[in-house]
Length: 113
Length: 112
Image 1 (tube, each protein chain N blue to C red):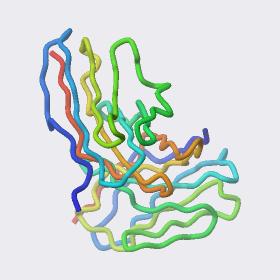
Image 2 (image 1 turned 135 degrees about the vertical axis):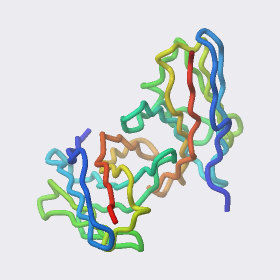
Image 3 (image 1 turned 45 degrees about the vertical axis):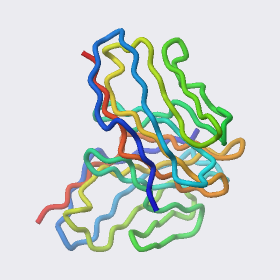
Image 4 (image 1 turned 120 degrees about the vertical axis):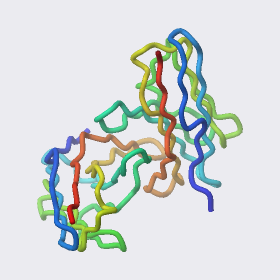
């Protein structure tokens, strides 16, 4: 069974440009998370979905970040416009609602120049 | 949210047991202790979790003190592939699911 799939794996953009990350969770997983991980730090939650509903987006910088999970499956995280400080790894994870184990993708490494 | 405290780094000889401590003195009665690890350039990987009792699976054992204020993750026979950052997390459960709050973790280096 395929794990959580993220793309692209790496992305380099100039500041002020938009960027989007895509995540395909494990089939049947209702819960989807987006995390941000800065170098040398642990992952920080940006947003959590239960099916297509964003149940926790309190840590998402809504002035430039947006996310969607259409049909409760795939999800897209967007940044517009990107800033130098957005350089980080963006991780997607999924889990069954009833279960406690979250499976993570390999992440997208964003570099803003 | 309960916070966790872990040593920044640890070394372990290959083939020996690796014992990774974690303090979570403010844990609530219904909060679980989770352990994840992150190998370089990969996403975090679930290892084990527990509430009160000690737990064991094919990867590791989790020992939780009786007062639940601390725990120890044990890798019984560490290999070079176990070199990673290990995160001890207290899981906050709310709404329909739960939130994983990661700390700094312990960087474990397994040496030949």
